[in-house]
Amino acid sequence: WTALCKQDLTNNDYQEELWELINDNRHRISLDVRPCIVIPYLRQARVLTEMDEDEILSCHSLTNRSMRTSYMIDLLRTQGRNGAVALLDGLMIHYPTLYTQVTGRKPSTEPSRFSGLIKYSELTEYLVRAVTGMQKELQEARSEAGRKSARCTSLETELSQIMEHEEKSRYLQTENERMQRQIRTLQREITKMKDEKCDFYVRYTAAIEEKSAVNMRLHDLTLQAYQSRDEAQAMITRILSEKDCLRSQLVELQERLFSLKAVERFRERKSSDVWKRQIWKCFDTLKSISEKNTITQFQFSLFTFSIKKSRDRCKNGSFLLPQSLPDISASLPHALSSQSHPHQRPHPDHLLPGGNLLQQLSVVGGNRTGVFVNQVTEGSAAHMVGISPGAQIVEVKYEQKEKALRMVLEDSTLEEAVWALRQVTGFCHLSLRPRPDDYRDLLQQLQSKDISSGDSIYVRVNMSLCAGSTGTLAVSCNDILHVTNTWPSEATDSWEASHVHPCQLLHLESGTVPNYFRAQGLLIRALEDMNFQTKSQKVTPFSGVNIFNQLTS
Image 1 (cartoon, helix red, strand yellow):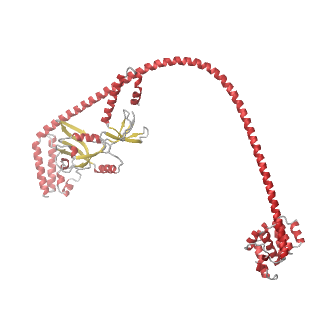
Image 2 (tube, rainbow, N blue to C red; image 1 turned 30 degrees about the horizontal axis):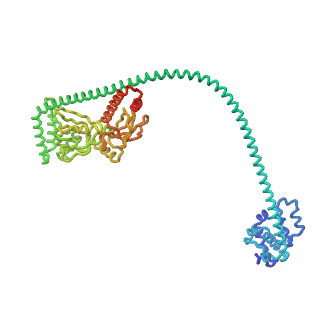
Image 3 (cartoon, rainbow, N blue to C red; image 1 turned 180 degrees about the horizontal axis):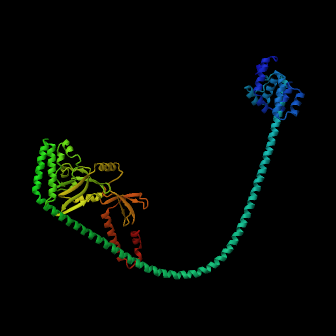
C-alpha cells in the first residue's frame, strides 16, 4: 500500500485501481463512515475545501448520513488519486476495522505508513489532536455513563423499597379484613356451639340408655350365633360321614356288579374252552404257513371269513369267542396284510397276565388330553402283547379279592389313573385307543415346559390354608383354583394349582395345595378341633370369635 501510494500522481492505471477498490466497498463505507469525523483530515490533506465541507454538512438535499458520505466520495473522485489516497488514510486513522475490510491490510499510526500528502510534522500534530480529542470524549462518556449508572441504581433501590412498602401495606390490609371476618365467624360459632351443647347433653343421656339395651341384645345374639355355629359344624360332620358311607356302599355295589359279571364271563369262558383250542390251533397253522410265505390271497380271505362267521355264531349262542386273539395280519408279510386289510386298525383290547401293571409301563397325560402309555418295560407282559407308547388307556378291568372291577380312564386325571393302575396286581384287561399324533403333541408341550401334565380342573376351596416354606399356596375359603397337575413328581400328595381371577379366569399366583384326600382329612380334623374348643369354652363364649372368623373367611 505504501509503495502504491508513492507512485506517480499522474499514473492513471493506479488511480483507476484505487477507485475500483473504493467503489467495490462504497455501500459499506456509506453506512459506517461519519463525514464530520473524516472531513478534518481531508481538509488537512487539501483534497476538500471549506466550501465543500459546508456543502456536505449543511446541504438540505442530503437528508441522512449515508447520502452525505456518498456525496463526499463523489467530491473526492474529482480529486483523482489524491482523493482516493486521502480517503483511505482517513479510514486508517478513524475507522481501522473498516480500513482492514476494504484494503485487506492492518492499520498503523506510523507516519511512514501514510501516503505523504501531509508533512510529518503536520500529520503528527493532527494525530495528537485527534487522539487527545478522542480521549477527552471517551473520558466524558465514561464519566457520564458512571453518573447515569449510579442514578439508575439509586432509582432502582428506591423503586424496590416503594414496592416492598406497598406490598406490606396491601398484605396488612388483607390480613386485617380476614381477621375481622374470622372474628365475626367465631362469634357466630360460639353462639351455635352453646346451643348444640344443650342438645348434646340430652342426646348423650338417651345414647347411654340405648347402649345398655344394645349390649343386652348383643349378648343374646352372640349366644344364638354360637349355638347356630355348633349346629352347623355338627351338620357338616354328619353330612361328610354320610357321604363316606354312601361312597363305601357305592363301591361295594360296583364290586358286587363286577363280581357277578366276572362269574358270568367265567361260565361263558368255561363253555367255550373247546372252541378256543380249535381257534388257537387254526391261528398257529396260519402263522406257520405265513412264515413260509405260502399263503395266498384267497386262503387268507377264506380264513378271515370263517373266523368272522364263527364269531357271529358264537355271539348268538351260549359262549363267547375270546377277545384277546392275536392279530394274525401283523405276522403276515407286509404286502399281503396291506392288500387284505387296507382299512384295518390294531385291536384296542389287550389281555395281561398277573403282575404289577405300573412296573410294566408308565403313563402321562390327564383329563384334558387323555392318559397315554409313555414307556413300556422291555420283556414285560405288556411288551409281549404289543402295547407301545402313544396309546390312550380308555378302560381297565381287573379282579381283586375274587371281585371283578372296572375303571374308565378316558376322562380321569393323572392321579386317578395312577391310583387305578396301582390297584392292578393280577390278571387284567386293557382297552387302548391309538392316538400317536395327540401323544406326540403332549410330549412336545411337556418337553417345552408349556404344561406340567395333561390335567385341567377347576376347584373351589372349602377352608383356609397359610403359605408354607416349600411353595405351598396360601388359599382362603371360596377361592377358585385351576389345578394343572394332580400327580407332581416332587410331592404325590399335593396338586399344582394357580389362583384364578373371579371374573376373567386369569392365572394369578401359583403353587402347590393338598390333594383332595389330604384336604378332606385336614377339613375333618379342623372341624373336630373347633367342636372340641367350642365344648371346652362354652363358659366364656366371647373367647372363640377369632377362630370362627379365621375358618369362615
